[in-house]
Figure 1 (cartoon, one colour):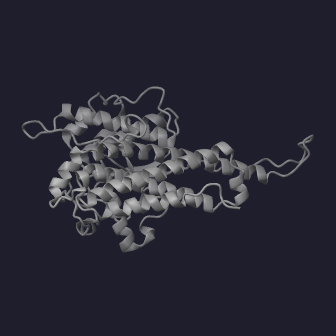
Figure 2 (figure 1 turned 45 degrees about the vertical axis):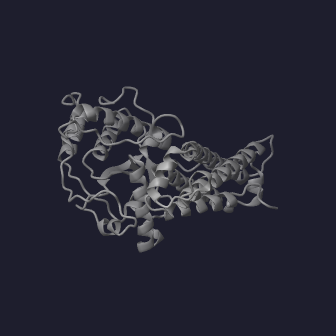
Length: 396
């Protein structure tokens, strides 16, 4: 009996669009954005395929009709979105302008693309794809739980409904993972990533002090374009098309104004928070290691460019070192901006703006840090079921 759910066509269509996107050099930002989201969606579809492949037909048949129907609808929506994305990217790649006119010079085609209806359609498709990814993620979690509970029911000994004598207790589900390792990555590891790392330490302190559940074992930060203590520079330099940002030696102190903004409230009355502040101020910027995708469960970034560059690095590392460079279930790249605003939206968390003297002021960092702190808190809630302490941390 054929499976009632098959993501094969959706996977093929998404991969087709992703492959075309990756062939394009210097694509417009909107195409790059939708391409990255399609690539993330591909990962969730492959997870669904693996889940379905590992289940016997009677297990799939046990899904409730509503569950099956919902998944079928999500897959159909993904197929339609993937076809539309591919058509738009193909149109741009061929430099086709209005009425089928092919532009001789790419810059002119790019400009007309930006002014035409395709850009509005891409914005809409990008939001739809993000929503479809979230819907698929939710369904995957529910399916996993359903199969687990169904397996537990089947494992129970068959006994009389009138007596519970001799009945063995059912096995408890495996406890949730409580030793997550995460790392915040931005280009130079002196601002946003350092703020996020220090803020995570503050949240850990306030959560554990109030007997809350803290599921993170390690939280670090690093800079993608930093040479010090990293070993990915040569690999990153060999990526084509080349990265747009330049490398720095590293070993720099964190931005003073960024830290001053984070620790603006008095912390001298709390020894633990004072220690976190003092440790944050003496840390130095460092680069990333080739083991980043195997060492950490989640890699948190602040912009779409960071996400794209890490995805390209991951591909290069797998080509160089094999699949062990990025084991399944490890090294998930997550955009912190996806935890801000409405569901399906991804907001860029950019570096603090500079004033006319080229200085990132404390006031400017106040705005950036507010976004970072809000995104970190929502990341913890959605991904790790974190419950904020009854009394909020001082710098929230």
